Image (tube, rainbow, N blue to C red):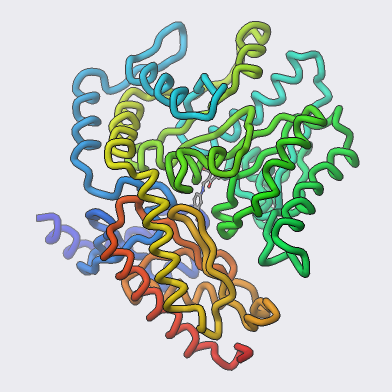
Length: 459
Ligand code: PXG
C-alpha cells in the first residue's frame, strides 16, 4: 500500500515545489534530486528505491538505540493514551517530566541535580546562555555578559546558538549577536604544528585565559564548549585540555557550560563527555540521544551552585516553551534510557568503537589519502589529505570530502563530510558484522574518491 503511494507520487517534484530544508542550497539540491527515506530498521535506512543504506551517522548523531524499536513506540502510545499533552507552566507538571528530571539528576555528573526542559539542542543552548547571564545579574554583576565559544564549535541555529558557535558562514547570515567571542579549537591535527598533543592541549586551553584577560573577567559570563566538537569535524581535545579549562574558569570566575548535545548518553563510552574528559561543568545541555531522536526533547542540567541562586534569589525567570517537559517526549526518553542501560550501550560504545578503529587502521593506514583516524567511543573522524607526510590539506577545502560522501552513499553508507574530514557516529547497537560492512563500504568509497582525485595527492 505504502509502496504504491510512494511509487505513484512525484515526491521529489513536490519537495522541490514546497519544502525548504535546513542547511541546504536549494537550487543545487533540486538539480540533483532529493533522496526520499521511506523506512528504517536497526542501523539501516531504506529509501524509495528500496536501497538499504547503513546509517553511519545515527541520523544526525542521535539514533543511539537504532531504528524500529517497539519499546519506544509502546512508551509513546501509552503516554499518548493517558495524557498526550499538558504543559509545565502555571504551577503544573506531569509525571513523565518529574521522573525524567530525577533520572537525569542520577545520571549526570555529581552536583547537576536540576533539569530545565526544551525541545531542541538549540533551545537548550539558548536557555543555558540566558541562565548564565541571569545568574550573574542575580549575583549583582550584570556586566558579566560575554559568552566565549570556539572556532568550529556548533551550538545550534537559534540566533544565540549560531553566535556562540564558531561557524563563520552562520555568523555572516545573522548569527552574530553582540557579546560573543571565540578562541582556537583544540584541533591538534589541523593546528598542532610541531607541538606534542599534550603541549598543544595546554596551548589551546590557555587561549581562553588570554581572551579572558583581554576582555576582562568582569565582562564575561561563561565559556561554552562541546566536550569534543562534533559538527566541527569530531575534534577531540588532547587530555591536557579540559583540566586546564576547568582551572581557568574557576580561577577567573567564569561559568563553564558543557554542550553535551552530541556526547551525552554514551556516545564517548561514558554516560557524558564530561565524564570522559573530566569536565566540571556548571551547566550541561543535552538533546539528541536523550530520546534517540524518536521525539524532539532537550534539557539544560544545572549544578546546585547555579540552581540555588536562581531558585532562591532569582524570582521568576521569564523563559520557557509550550512543549517544555512534553509528557510523550519524556516518556519516550525514559524508555530510551532503559534500553541504553539494560543493553549496556555505554560500555558497548567503547568496545565497538575500538573494533571500528582497528578495522579502519588495518584497511587504510597505507592509503595515500589517509591523514589520521581518530575517535573515542563510537564517534570519530578520518582526515583525507593531499600529503599525509606533511599533513597538507587539499587546496579547495571541502571538495574532496563531498566527493567521498557521495561515493559513500553510492556504496550504501551514510557518512558526513566536514571540510575534507569524514565523520562517523553510528547507532550504539551496531553489531560486529555491521561494523565490518561499514568499513568495507567506506574502503570502496575512499578508493573511488582516490581514483577521482589522485592527481592532487602527493605520494
Ligand atoms: N549543540 C550541539 C553540540 C549540536 O551538535 C546543537 C547544539 C543544536 O541542536 P538542535 O537539536 O537544535 O539541532 C547541535 C546539533 C551536522 C548537524 O550535520 C549537527 C547538529 C544538528 C544538525 C546537523 O553535523 N547538531
